[in-house]
Image 1 (spheres, rainbow, N blue to C red):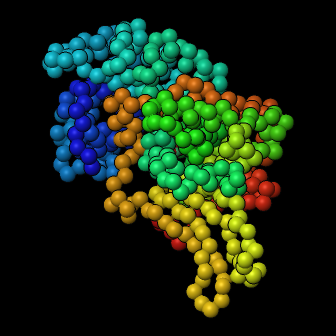
Image 2: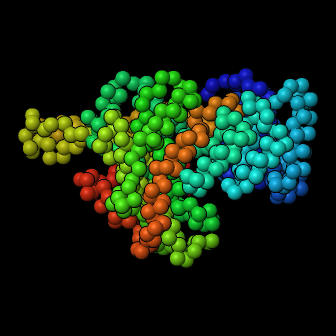
Image 3: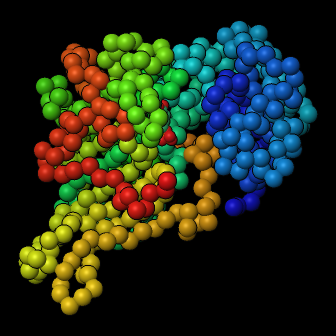
Length: 505
Ligand code: BG6
């Protein structure tokens, strides 16, 4: 772990300070940054919300429970108390103007105490519909005038469709500078996702073959074993396409497909990604049904537990047409990716939790080998396992030991946990550290968000115009609807998952 950075004094306001995100992700991440010496010497965390706590201590006790349950370092060898002293809670209504007057005087008091103007981060861990009003209040109260020291963090979803995303971006642009707006896509904070760039651009071996001359197709899977849990009302407005594809999956696709940046400058990287999004072929309305599959889970059994159908979940319409599974085939219309299909799939209650990106290379010619030698011949494949296993694998042909030339595929594996002794910061640690430092590279710029909405808009519209008639169409513990297999099988491929011998139980 690296040492302390010389960061300016910082106040981190968490709006929605008593919520689930704060408890599960934000406080554990800030605490781990504290333990690893990544927070400024002078910092405070201020939770703001409407829940009543009898005292700061009661609030801190609740946060500690979250840390013990969700943090990778649990209670951090007794360091919690020191961290907790910097944390306080204010019961305030975020839609009330007086709240922002209190915040202003609070920031001024801290500035006096610290004898310097602090950096201030406003983290909006609130329901998405509240975000615009809060942003307006922050602006009206002139809390974000200095774009260098005042930052606002937005959680997804960023808009509900292209039009609402545009409106929100437009509204924000009238009040804030783009570089003080941090739109989170937590996939970009995952170590293994960031490593895709290192793998591609810090090695001379792969980039020369990273194009349609050598690559046959690419697959991206983000499979989950959880259902919608208690998020029925949110999910009814979202569905898997908005919840996972518009953001996380398209971001993974950008990492795989982008051109080499000329520097690690935030805008340079984001320019290269937006180029990919803009080049993704927009599926014609009449082709949507041939190139996409949607699914919804039925009730059934998952890992020995009986689970409800999506339509029986709390706050879900019993006739809901909302998809909990998506598979789609995309093309990127540029020189590098011409005619290379990119298959993506994601879903809830699937057979296993796994996020994988696989790059399938074209077959080598078999001329030199007799047919029997090459019965199990497979093309080379590169697998980025994003989670839960964090690894990179290269599949190649090897000769089986013995007198005959018999070939079979084997894997060369790089495993993060083994190589780096298990040190894997959580995505939110990386992202919060970047916000505190003022580095927006891993955050979504306004044009990226809009370009991603443009990719999925034709699908959203075609689906809205043709309601699904076969929902629910997949059982828990499966890999989604049969049609998802057909989508890829029609092109002579099949979906891949990690070999079972490697999986963590
Ligand atoms: C969130 C989605 O953005 O990502 C959730 O809203 C989903 O529905 C989650 O479960 C998946 O994240 P991860 O990090 O567990 O793959």
